[in-house]
Length: 413
Ligand code: F6P
Image 1: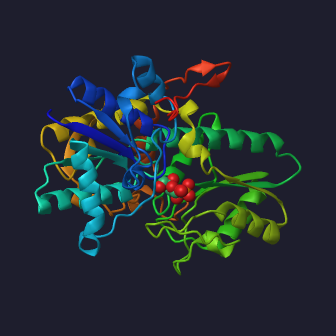
Image 2: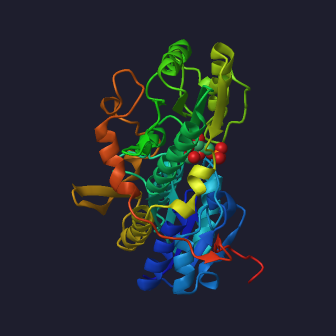
């Protein structure tokens, strides 16, 4: 390695995105990188000249260990869409000028679909202009909607939290259901992909009935059919628990959340903020059936619950970070690291590199055959796919009873 390396984090954070950062830092150090820079708030902050020399901040093995257990983006994240190259070459020249000034040889970006779009554009620009930097993406998203890779780091931990929390909510509902009918609606993230919503089925076991109904965005949602299903369940039981994706849509293509109190926020990639599905459906049930309802939006909790992270996920997040450094050092450009499941029993996964052009801007949805015919539950195959990803724990380091996090203290240097 002759030059330096720079790493950034982008998109919605996860419980293990910092484990990938730890993997990048550790591997870059082990492989003799001279300087390891971190962009603050991804490419957006970098364009504003914001970056740090990470050797001033992540110095010891303990720092690495705490980083692996700290949720959210240590370096700060962004949702920033680079223009197409032909639309604005100035912005690219500005980025490469800064990269050249810092003598950057490898650029590593940890993110989801939209972040891989950044890797694609920067690697294309480097090739067009004959710049020597190598650009490699590290997969990350709780949504698990990246193509080609078996799954994405961040998903396993979110699934573990969602399965656990759903089970606890069901227990609470059963405990209270005596004379009163109660309908609980749990809203799960994932945008147009139902991987996370399907993970609520992990709550089903010998000691728990699991959710009664699970609605994924892959299947059009019909409001009257939903109400009548809940009505008929209430004839047999006092409590009904339903899991819904934030991204469910009616057959007309309208998000169910848009039928409720509208939130108009749209991000740089044109994604609408999806929120309020559970509230709208709970209100609909109250109005139509007249029973007690509760709407639970798991919201940010599902992606920041590091106290319940999956050790498998933390380790894989670390591994893909390290693999990206290795790939970039060995000359890979315009690639993303993927996870390849080589065996189910025992579960084994390895890493590989793949052309980012085939990954960016493609959404991997839950296959229709992993959802039941009625569109109200996931199949055994779906559960078998997720189960290995949620195994084992890596307990946070508690200080006075609360997990210790490592934070970037910019006043330090
Ligand atoms: O992209 C990950 C994700 O968690 C989606 O599931 C969700 O729709 C979105 O982020 C929410 O992002 P924000 O917190 O920025 O509204």
